[in-house]
Image (cartoon, rainbow over all chains, first blue to last red; front, side, top):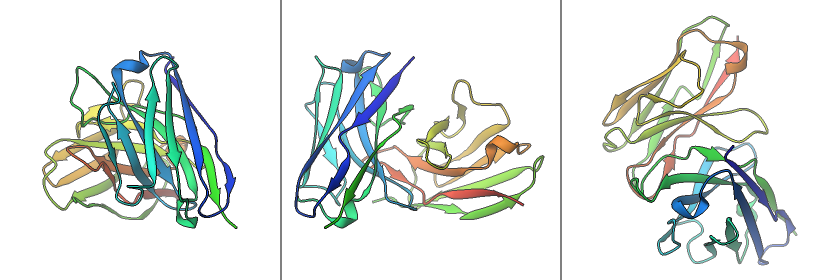
Length: 123
Length: 107
């Protein structure tokens, strides 16, 4: 079955960096748009970033633009999120989610989600 | 950016009740709207896409309707497993935006 498994979360000091990974299985990873979505403690869902199936198109939420970088390695079926200049407000559970295929519209819903990895930014 | 507003924020209901949650968009999103269910400590789960299409494996007591700026998620007969938080999400263009969530509690 389709599965996403996030890793790389942890406790980090403000201003430091962290890289999250999301390993995909059960579907042709290289054919799908992928997203990162986060959820701060006790808060709602916030979309963070998206990358096209081939990695050529990337978009970010204003709150992370210039600090976070989404990327993918289709040979490894893995999605990444590089987070620089971390702030306390970046503390959240980070989910990766599967979007539409390359045959579908880029703007698509998210039908498969990982269980999430927790990032805590604190001094 | 288009804002998504859900109402109510919290809903108290009993098993067997018919429950309706509303999601309003600040501008038209056509039918590019999804509904997700999230239980504490778990990932969101897709229930409805394209405003009214039921995701495979989701019980038929869930239904969605609406287009443009006003949408509803209806649970026809609330079951114990349905107590959770529900989010709408638009995906007509960048950025993907979620509503603030509606928590369905046991009355």
